[in-house]
Length: 149
Image 1: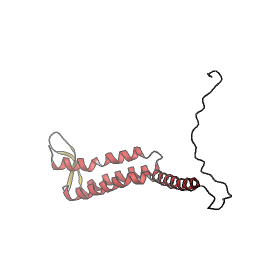
Image 2: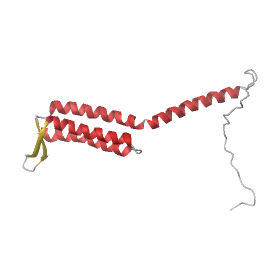
Image 3: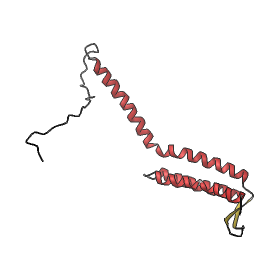
Image 4: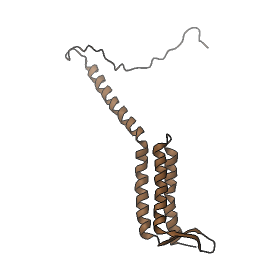
């Protein structure tokens, strides 16, 4: 729908940051050319940094998960008993027991596998969230073996 033949055109300010190949001498350039070229360089650096952070997002998300997983593995290797019980029954007994080493390394491998999926996936958030939830496994093993029913 047109309004009586007159259209309002909003003019968006654009910064023409491209310059001619022929550069006159530095004395004859106005001051705003220097500020625009400096501004252009600053925006180029910011753009490159943002692009690098975006491309390395999987690495930045994986670093805290790796550190926490290694910390939990070290803590569990010291504090878990030699035989770790799984699937606590209502009678207070465990349905299955595994060695301490298995209880420490299996959650570590599970978290590592999720992080590998994070690096290989285009949508890195979903496997990363699964790796975060896999960090609960060592904590649950420790709680159920320290405080059985």
